[in-house]
Length: 112
Image (cartoon, rainbow, N blue to C red; front, side, top):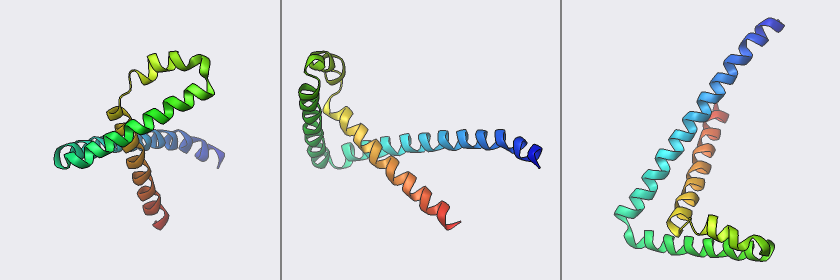
């Protein structure tokens, strides 16, 4: 019985890796579709979201300045200087899409 369980262990590991990779690809594609769709079909709403993302970026900068004042200049030059509001917006959309995809997958899995 133990040999059967040991043989299925690598198979489960491979299936788990394939599942993770499939979810990442699906989430990436859906995130880019949502981001592009917002940009193409609803420019006013997209602009409002970019302004909101700018506020998130400003809040992140303020938190780093207060929590790590010695590293604020380095963080701004390396992290915040490279990230713009559109990058933060893409990141936030990706997190939301990921949460939705995984919630739907969990609901589907719980029904079976």
